[in-house]
Length: 393
Image (tube, rainbow, N blue to C red; front, side, top):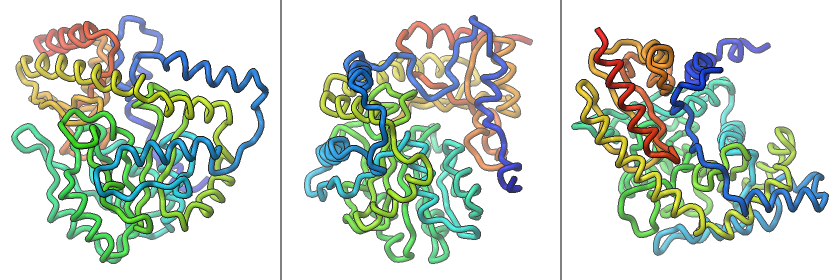
């Protein structure tokens, strides 16, 4: 087996979760998913497809109906003046993580330089490493309780040697979100250096600030169809479909056929019955996503003030995403802290060093709390457990 694969570190989040397996008393906030089931009409669409015998292969790039529905959905979210997204730019994938891996496989060779904005979901930095790339990180920094990007630092890091820039916005775990002005600077700079941009925008709809489109700024609002830009999306978060494994990529039309070849050699295609569910989810978006976003905002606005009231906790409300990323004063290794919280307090959180490369010391004391809880009372119960644990001698 390749050494780079042998050297991959098992997910720290999974390791923390393993410490709580079999314990019904643990409040689980470690994974990035809601505890609400997928709406019935989406599940029924998949069941209907199965009952009709749709158990065969589909086109590598996805059903034409789904690609057209995704293109219309993406276009409807764009700001005034943006170029509409055509179905010829859509590749359906088996989940958002598959979309991200395919994008990396498409442009990164062994030895290439990749720049990533961190902290970030660990898959995004592991994927180019798997391809043999050298990953350089530019870290967000907490300033007066809000995460910010040093744009000058990032622009200096991205040079003509940089094959790919990876940006996740809204960000997992911090909730930090690129502004329109920052996106314009990055796109202009990457056009000059010839660098591809991989924009992970799966949390685009989970945005709590006022905007023209009702969602976070997207590179698709300002990019041209032939820009070296790939945007990854997923049905998981906005449609409560984490277990379905259905996503998509928006990419230049000239690259779509080649992406279809990569899909052939990875998964062949997404299952037809799952794609049928995706079509219905998009057709009835207004019955799902606005309610999801409104509830998540209530979750955020419930959890963050409670955490802020706990002595030793540093946290601010994130503008996007589904997480509270907070620091515990006086705590050391976040991984050890997260494991202790499971065992000693029955509280399951993700360690902050899971979102950095090489477990950066900058993440000491940071924890991620997924606040996507159907029952708001679980959030207050969790804070009570945290506060009680901190009070222990």
